[in-house]
Length: 239
Ligand code: CTP
Ligand code: CA
Image 1 (cartoon, helix red, strand yellow):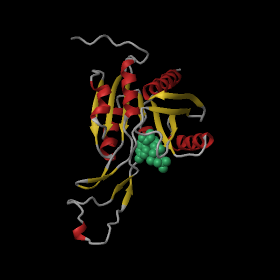
Image 2: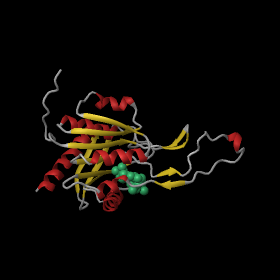
Image 3: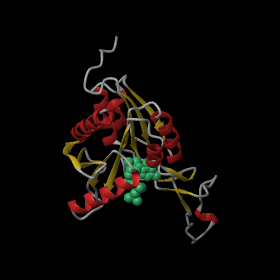
Image 4: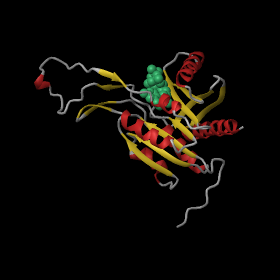
């Protein structure tokens, strides 16, 4: 059947969304990773497509059950990635053809310096736990900002462990300046809150550090409010 003609306030826009969490191998069977489920980024991809955008979703280690939310949308191209290096090269390739970049993926900050070709075996070092030497990964977002197309809107995410709303905004503002993004979505996380859950609670800061949106509810609802802010930034950049 023919696809229905797209309608919505994002028609004509190409949006790059990264989601999930990158993993860095230790050996062929183990990795360093994080708890990001990819749900928030997938919800952004689905909402953007439903508002008429063409979406590239770089999916870092996302469960099929989570990806199912977007799998049936012709306007979303899903590209699976594993490591930070894979995400970085895929992100640069896709960003070159995108008006908006939404970097929801949780990127492993460090990778293992010397990845073992064979699995680490206790037998090979009895009673002596291995020491992993880590090296810092490149900051993908900073690299994308450096190569930003004219008018391109770039959005970062930051999940912070904080003890107050003030601390959340303060940390968010510092991160925003460090990264040079147009918008930063910040949320508070802890052992229980913020990861595998279906809901989210975010503040969106613009480049001045002003809170331009407060959104709580389902990850889809949060995605819609974030896209409202992106739409606003794109309009502002065009003026
Ligand atoms: N990010 C990135 N590349 C990295 C690390 C982070 O692109 N190597 C992006 C994330 O996708 C996110 C934003 O930067 O959109 C903020 O991520 P965060 O981990 O909060 O920032 P860091 O600079 O790594 O700071 P922290 O020490 O708090 O982890
Ligand atoms: Ca980090």
